[in-house]
Length: 132
Image 1 (cartoon, rainbow, N blue to C red):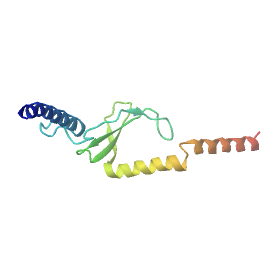
Image 2: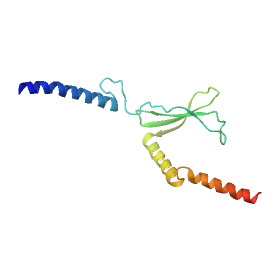
Image 3: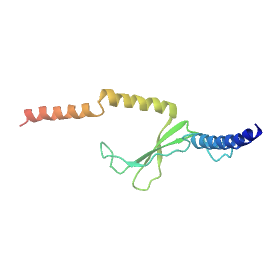
Image 4: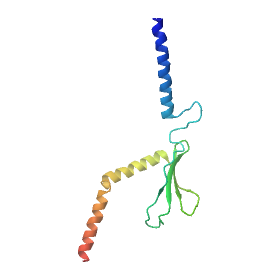
């Protein structure tokens, strides 16, 4: 009986170590202080804007989480080497509600963009018929 306990103890220790490493990898290592809350200081890639309206087409946008992942900042940067500016600072919880609303409107209201394309296609056909 004692040999079975001796064999099980290293297995249980190994399993416990592996499980601890997985939890630290998923949630962050709180014991050393090197980790942090999920999404803290997470950055999106920068992407250029399309030229529309008053846009010059040379702006770059990005987003980042801050304040332990509780706030979301949307940043803009122009091509003339101006420093990044915070355009919008919003609580992450409010941003999620806004994003879910937008996704719902895009899926249901625009049929994933198809409804808008069909609307403008139909509008162009009607204008072309009136102005041959």
